[in-house]
Image 1 (cartoon, helix red, strand yellow):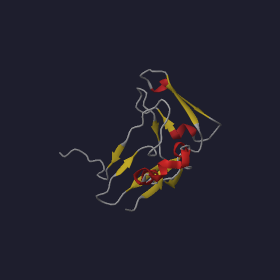
Image 2 (cartoon, rainbow, N blue to C red; image 1 turned 90 degrees about the horizontal axis):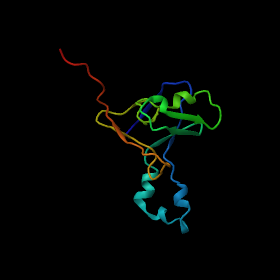
Image 3 (cartoon, helix red, strand yellow; image 1 turned 60 degrees about the vertical axis):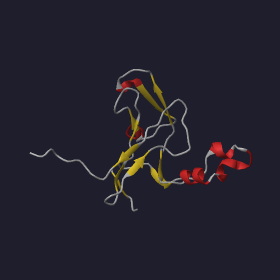
Image 4 (tube, rainbow, N blue to C red; image 1 turned 120 degrees about the vertical axis):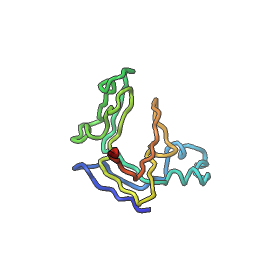
Length: 138
């Protein structure tokens, strides 16, 4: 499959192949998790978008967009374009900075890196299908 990636921002996040290493796997005696072929293959599946700046997201428990507070670890000119509370209700949206195009008949699964975790969060997954949007017929 060929994935075409068109930048739609001046400085989109870096796009890299899925990385094989995971800190939690390294911490095991003799790195035993790497001996599980499906787990190791999952680590290198797909692509990763790397945030150019670390940040903290805090949710107050409220239902409004401003109830998620985002604080960058250090100043970055594009930080406000990387993540936001687009849907409110505690949902944090990451903006890729790219328009993706797949060949006909191919879809994309969009998710965080496999076999990783984030403290106090619940990542979602989504399918992006190449069907596009259609106007209602008249």
